[in-house]
Amino acid sequence: MVLYLFTKSVDIMRLVLSLSFFLLFLVDSLSQSTNDILNLLISNKTISQIQADSVRAQAALLQQQTDASRKSFFITATRQIQLTGYSQVRYQTFQESGKHNSFDIRRARVDLKGSVTPFFSYRLQADLVDKPKIIDAYGEIKLADYFSLTAGQFKIPFSMENLTSSNKLEMIDRSQVVEAMVARSKDVIGNQNGRDIGIQAGGTFLKVKDIPVIEYRLGVFNGSGINVADTANNEKDITGRLIFTPIKGLSFGGGFYKGWDKAIKPDVPGKSQTRNRFGAEFCYVLSRFSLKGEYIAGKDGKTSRAGWYVQSGYFVIPQKFQVLGKYDSYDPNTSTSDNISTNYVIGANYNFNNWSRLQAFYTIRQEEGTAIKNNFLSVQYQIGF
Image 1 (tube, rainbow, N blue to C red):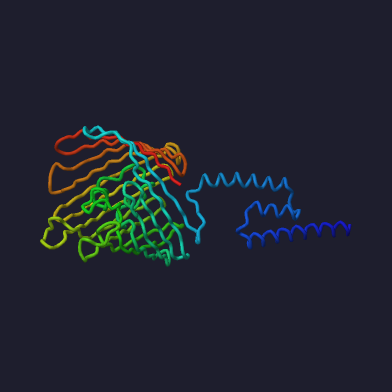
Image 2 (spheres, rainbow, N blue to C red):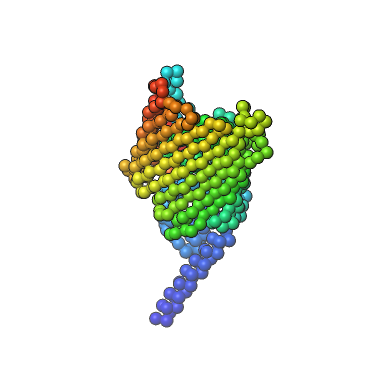
């Protein structure tokens, strides 16, 4: 009996020592592969070859499942960095005469993110379509949840839809008022992808069940757009955003933008014209249902503009198949009658996985005054990595 207990004790000690050695080896030799570790355990007779093969098979299966569900991967460099990207291929067919049905590459972006310290992170994003250009280039210092500083080129903190990444938009196109008044395709400063060069402070307050009740951002920018210095004047543009989230899924708030534009025909000779905006927004999202909208108004010089949209969606198949509809109205000059354009957009998204999805939307366009046959259909496939 004593011999039996002694033998069992030796076996237990041997197992403990083997496991301890394994843990030490794992800590001190992170560069070693899983196969090297398993081979070491086999040579120490801690596990058998059959057991090692079983562990390898289970690990491979688990890794495949994990990779399929992950939204991002890390690559190895001098410091750990995250490299992602996506491309969007679009097909459009137009009712309007003179426009040709066509395929095009909407976006092709490469996005690099990383952290130098627990407090300092950075981002560099480029779009390779047409003329390659830098979209984002900034560093962020986060001292606490309630205070961080961002400096460089990034999205101006104005408009919910502007701040939504292009690969996360529920619809193919942004609303008319966002395109016209938030540094995008129809803004007086040209298409700047909703971005500018400057510095921003921001953070969150009053977390309830890990949900920040108050979020704020306040920034100072050139007002001239991306990849250029201030070309309008010595003044800087100021913008801010304040959002409240009283309960999970519901948020509302607003923002402002006060700045200047280098006008071809300025209001006052020798001076820039004003470029001001203010907006209000709301968003309500449940597991399947979503409802959101924005109102934005402002002035470019003496011209007042305003627009709004409301959008709703529902997942027929959770996380997979979503149907959506949007009412989108924009007035490019509120002092002039019969110039409001209204879009009625209906369509659907199908998410194949975290990396790819197919979108199809039909837009019915109506203009006050002379009617134009200019409805169109857009189909877009997005693939990412």
